[in-house]
Image (cartoon, rainbow, N blue to C red; front, side, top):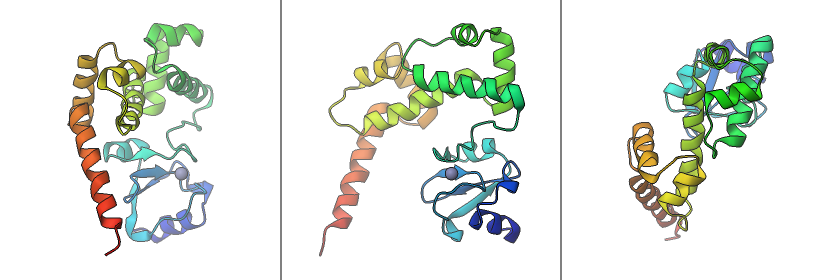
Length: 194
Ligand SMILES: [Zn+2]
């Protein structure tokens, strides 16, 4: 660990925002150096050069400092933020690139190009990530069946949901649910006093 970077994390130094990102291995969340959340343990902290690198290593963006928000790109960044907001509020609907472009009064090719340049992802990839993240949370609720979850997260059918989920997570939704149940049961087991 670079001492200069560690100092920036401890001091929440905004001057380092954009120069590096840090991830916390125990939570799988990544942050901007300026993030005001609790300082992580040094041994759990990992440094990334870009937000994309953090994402590719399986880290999710912190909800507090929003390291995935492209704040330093002027009007293009603002457009990208509007796209992420639209996707986050309408992911459960049949969202298309044309629909996004229409709402933002621009062409779909300009929107696609700008979003990709600013965030390193296409709007479709961002949409898929949001749908999968939401589905993961819903799978932890035992009352919901797979079809309901598929429709509530914007997938056309349960089988389309299963295909996309497997591609992204390496498990089918039912397998993921079983694994989560097993992990949760194990955690309860461990907490039980001797
Ligand atoms: Zn953060």
